[in-house]
Amino acid sequence: MSNQAPIGFIDSGVGGLTVVKEARRQLPNETILYLGDTARCPYGPRPNEQIRQYTWEMVHFLLQKKIKMLVIACNTATAIVLEELKAKLAIPVVGVILPGSRAALKVTKNNHIGVIGTVGTVKSAAYLKALKVKSPQTVVEQLACPKFVPIVESNEYRSAIAKMLVAEGLAPMKNKQIDTLVLGCTHYPLLKPLIQNYMGESVNLIDSGAETVGEVSMLLDYFEIAAISTNKKLAHQFFTTGSPKLFREISEEWLEVEGVTVEKVYLEE
Ligand code: DGL
Image (cartoon, rainbow, N blue to C red; front, side, top):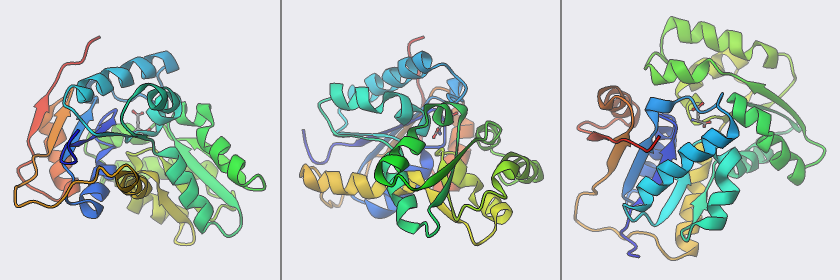
């Protein structure tokens, strides 16, 4: 496979764009192929078997496009399908949970870490396990925030309603004495200003997706598959199972680029 082949990113919707934004900044030679399963978002409340099936459908789609690496830019899919994908695929597979956990352990001073995520991620306790394995004395507070993903998907993440829902959703975390909060869902960084405002400046927010790009970069070097700089414009491609218009609006605003082309795809039911 050529080093110039694209890196594939998957998410249940637009959340993985928070990972793409960081990838474009840190790895400007890499071509990005992104698939968001917006039509079936959110994944968070779904049974594990369904999340597994949907994730595999996205993976099959991207494998046909000859990706050289797969980034599961979705915590819920990482929690449930990462190990299986790593075992079965011939290309490197990166999830978002371990990089997020490492970053949290690096910055916490009081070993008291909060994790917010979807119902699926919290139920899997994937962050709790990852943090405890590395640092057993760490106290971990988990909280599911199921109302956050729909605000982001509907492009209302800057609204007054968003502010209210963030405050309401985070209330149980407010007095837990945490000094670090992992944004354990790739949609949440779009709500970062509201989350920071509510939790206060003294709480470190960890963007698990952005942390993942460091790992992607390291693996590209390790497997000697990093793309080299050429004069050609990179052919990034974005696919969604939902509305290309809404996807384009959110991606252009979030990635701060114009003329993003988004194609609609249909995955098997
Ligand atoms: N962005 C995803 C995550 O990181 C999934 C959100 C959802 O579909 O519920 O967990």
